[in-house]
Length: 602
Image (cartoon, rainbow, N blue to C red; front, side, top):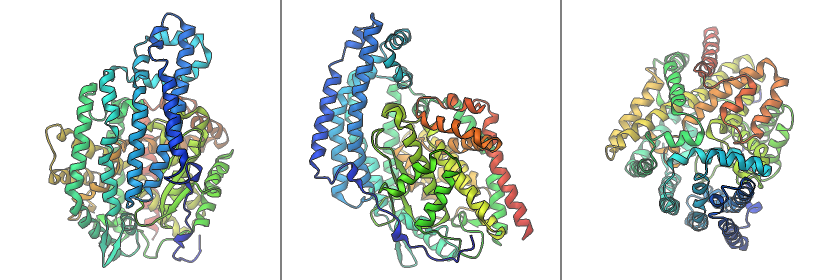
């Protein structure tokens, strides 16, 4: 860890090759696959009416369920590849009108093909529980669909008529234009920082620069850029929220987050309890840490652009791509089994797009495509420690997706309650390795970074969740003006950060770059949920690493076959116990204790 500080070569970060999906937008296989998906849907639709028509014959009903759902999955696999190619290509070229138009056109064509399948879940939900149980028992091969049927049955009280479900499906591509506007606006956004024109990713990365003047310039440039686009982003958020509220009303969801909770197979009370536990811990964790950090940096309070600044005056260590690969694979290898081998697949093959460039959207993700195809990983590599941990995070997702693939696409899909497990776990293992290899003088800086990552994942995401909840509540009474959105943002973020962080003028518009508010309303609590869940798993692993690995592999391989309560039972963990959530907050609090002790030694 004593390597000299140098600027990493960012051009060695890889670009992906999407030709495993399609060669280009002109690939003739695209049209052929659209035709193939339609043919599969037509075959599936031949079963319409047969499910309820077979309700007196358990064996026949079981066979019909098995065949119909299998065709549904096959069609979904074909369209999943098409949709993935369009999205992946567009996400690296948000400034390319052709790529954006292609993505929109593919989405529209797939909607036309998929909409006639809405009858399937509606007809399944006309059946009684006892009829489905008898059918699965009489036709054993159909029993593999039980977890998927469980999720379908959960939606039964909220389903509408065939006509309305068809209408909702058909308008999907039109609704998607709002997130598209959001993405394209951010891709085109530039922040002026002392004469430099920075993309969103570059400007956000500058906020962790060792130079305070550079951090301030980037933050002020972002504040101006966000202010210039705030009206547009407020319109997008208001429209998305109003559209969601209308559908929620028809479906009978009482609270804006209820549909997300249902999809996650978690009750709202548990999420509320988690959010309350985190908020109750604000003073002991985030407020205390930022006060300690301000003191360590010789300040009374921190500006908001100092929140992720390095503690030490010397520039933090950077990593080139080869170094990142070595660290991450070694961390995966700590789990044993084939974890490192699966992670290496992404490095050895062109499955990662890490090189930052204009037009590429900000952020990071792992896209599973479908169970019969490999995933892809997307990030914007700047060579920082946080980028290294982000790489580990997204590869955790990727390894999880390869392990769950054997379940098939319908069952590999993991609820958000478990979707962040492998990613946060991999990130934690990588940090532990960095800390173990660090010199004593580097440990405080690394510990600060780990605490800040934890605060960003737990405290900040719960603040986002509370902001989002309040925004949707007020939107129910009418459009929320941009100024009021800013007030809610300042209230919720201010409460989470505490008195040691100054929210400088301009910060009131920083909600405008959080894509989850538009793409996936009420997604953000899943990060805190996952982090606290992983904290409990890591505490369990510490007691017996060897016994932990096979249980953990089984959890990931299960995909969405089990609820999070069922998945954690083999570890002796009960997330329905309120004390479960304090395991993670106490673990984060202990890190703050360590940071305070190290600071006292200086």
